[in-house]
Image (cartoon, rainbow, N blue to C red; front, side):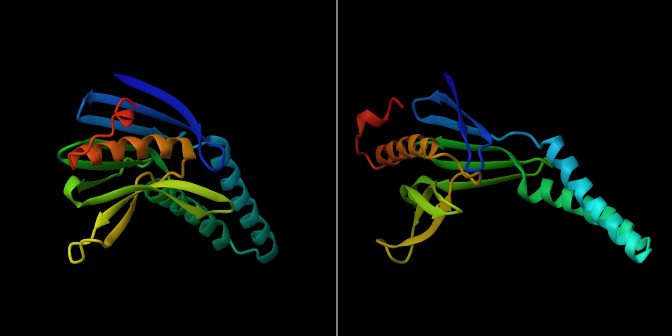
Length: 190
């Protein structure tokens, strides 16, 4: 079964959340971000090159134009490879664990797997980013101190609307509770 909803990120961009149910114990959330806008790419490139041309007319040094082209290309490659995320996937297998995959615009993929036994809790955290934003986090158990938290892992790197965080948090909590043997039936049909 597949379900898709649209949300907006903190900057007003459109995000699509797809929920896929493979079985009662295996679910996947796929958060798709908008592709790189040709308009914004052109605007940034033109601004950098016009500023370089203005400096060139003042200094009459052609190295400025070459440097501007080089910096623009390196900046674009760095942005596509390290910053611009096209899709984030959260695969939840109740008895096994949680797999998070981020696909960048350059084609690079980063995958993290967290065993269900290491998960202490799933929470919605808040941060201040020009305004208060909410994001989903997984708290990992500290191996030395049983009541402690060793790490806080954000689930989606793309800052999302609170609605997404709430829905995914409820489902993750229900998976976590079912792993511990507890039952929370009103969360399961999400």
